[in-house]
Length: 292
Image: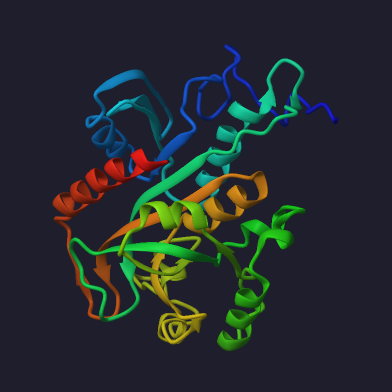
């Protein structure tokens, strides 16, 4: 096995993994991921017992017990670049020996469950207490193509259908499609709507929003919402799931995203007061995850 270089497996002066500032054993094998640092504590406040609370940069980590099950929650901040750091470092905590700087012989598979917010791309998806599960992620960020195993985990048919149907601009990052965990979706999603989630590398132009800067192609939303694959529609826009799904597939982890729909880009509705619907989603997920 190849020994990793010091500048590859980056540890801080205490021996903790660099960005998370965590040690092996600090987190459970079932982990909630949230973008908002404040939301991590909202979830942790439901725990019956908290054994670890740490904060580094935008990453807040809590590990504890809910109804006897050990769980962790981490905030990731926004974007696929942050998710790329978090997932790689979580994997390292379980699957790399920090002393030898080599992968362990036995790999631990994690349950990575993202609870996020999102904007709907179908008119019939209401705002407020409407939850969408990402059966597939369609990444517009290009991240998976940087990894040697990226092409091996993408859904080739869905990827090619989307590129061809959309007549995708070659000057933009090449899209890639990744399937969510069948196990987690079957176990946790219930009757929530399932669809194809577009993961954008930004909030404004990549999602068709204009302030003072004009969008190069303002037809992407209208064209994408007409796209379908094996009975799934393009349901929503967000900024993390393609990275979560692609890295999890490459590393051997289970991953699922469920989003609280707080905006509808077709009906032009936005709900700034979504705390109650998010609280309802958190409570449901905590109870459902006990089945894992």
